[in-house]
Length: 241
Ligand code: ZN
Image (cartoon, rainbow, N blue to C red; front, side, top):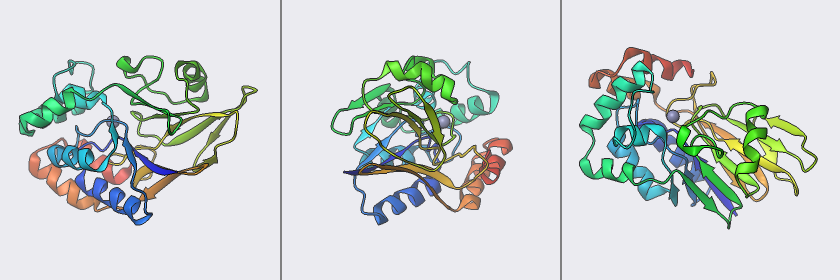
C-alpha cells in the first residue's frame, strides 16, 4: 500500500503542480489532503479544483472555512485576513460552497489513519500541534495508529511507543507494531521551516517519509504581486518561514 499526504496548499498552483508531478512520478495514485486549499496564494480556484480531482479524501482547514464564511476571520492575523478577503472575492461561488462542505476530520480504517487539520483533541479549535507534549495530549483522541495533521506548516513525525516513549523523527520513520504516530507532512504552498521547497509526505508499506520538491517560486510571487496580495506573504515564500 502506498499513498501520499499533502497539506496547506494555500492557493499556490506552481507548488501544487510540482508536488503532484513528483507523486505521479513515483507511481503513487492515492493522495490525501489535510486542508487549507486556499488563502495567501494567487490561484485558489485552480488549486481547489486540482485537489478535488487528484485526492481521494479532502478535509477542511481554517482558511477554507474562513473563505467560505463558515467561521469568522477575526482570529486570523492581519495578512491572512487581507488574503482571505481577496480570496473570497475572486473565487467561484460553487467552489466556496464546496469549501464550506469539507469535513473537519476523516477516519480511514483501511490505512489505519486519522486526518485532521489542527488537533485530534479539538478539531474545531484549530490548535497547533507542535511538540511531543502537544502530541502526548492528543494521542488519546484518535483510535488509529497514524494521525496526519497540518496547520503549522512544520513537517515532523512524532512516534509514541507502547511504553510511552516519544521520538521526533525529522525525515522518515518506519512504522513499528505497537507504536503510534502523529505526522505533519509540512506545507505544499507556504513552508515555514526555513526550507522554501514544497513539502509533503509519502507512506510506502511501513515507511513514512517527508519529501521536498523545488517549484517556480518567482512565478507564484509575480502572480501574488499582480493580485495585490501583501508583500510580506510574497517574500516569505522564498525564505521558507
Ligand atoms: Zn495553513
